[in-house]
Length: 298
Image (cartoon, rainbow, N blue to C red; front, side, top):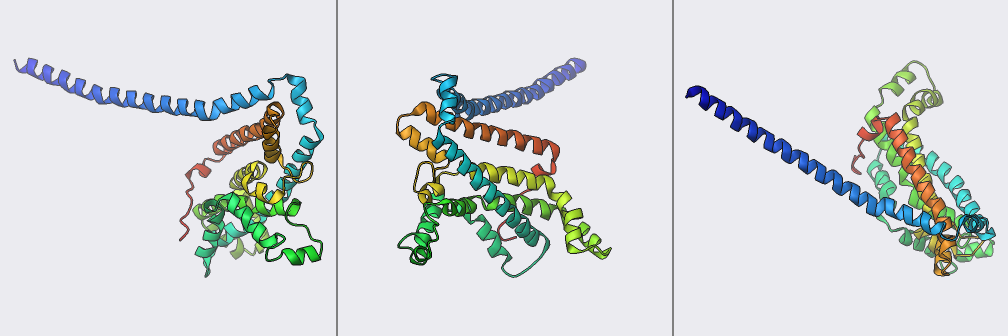
């Protein structure tokens, strides 16, 4: 009887143990399935629709839309703005991240808060700020008009607006990475007689190279895809101040959907390349996944 009781207790315990495992397995399957459905509806399906509409009138119509002079002008302007904005944010991002992560100084929290400001302010509001500053009735507008310096409805205004909205991407990536690495290697190099530039090029830069590439990748994608702030300051002058997102909007409003989706497909390819690049960097440098953004009060 005792042996039978022990066997019964063992079977009961095994059954109770199996039930939570089965429940956890079912819950995991539901979560994974829900995530895949969500991604399919809101990520994969829009991609399919964009390319389907882009090629709706055939391959010849697709490439004809991309070869249109106004479309080419929008592509050139988008690339020009990105080529200006990304290096500017790269220099600022490295300098600000180095200062915040490696040194203590008065106003450090204020600097971190200012870097985060573009995340809190709507891009449209940022564009309106530039209108108030540089517009014909703005604070600096009369002086700029007197000296024939175009800011609004010209490339400089688009660059300024794009710099603002993309400002945090590189610095925020590097701040977390540099703080996790500490200052020991730099201090060791300096104690051995290395100069500040030698320390930066031979110690700091190799340590942050993957995080820097990660930030540049995100900054470039946002610069080329920015719509709100650029829409306010550009003036929508076709062939002159229209970037690719603005050109897509104009074509769509003119019911030229095939051409609009053809240009949009290039932005979709850029987004896809950004995702692939992020995945490659995550695989190459796992430490990027472990770093966490510091608090603004750090």
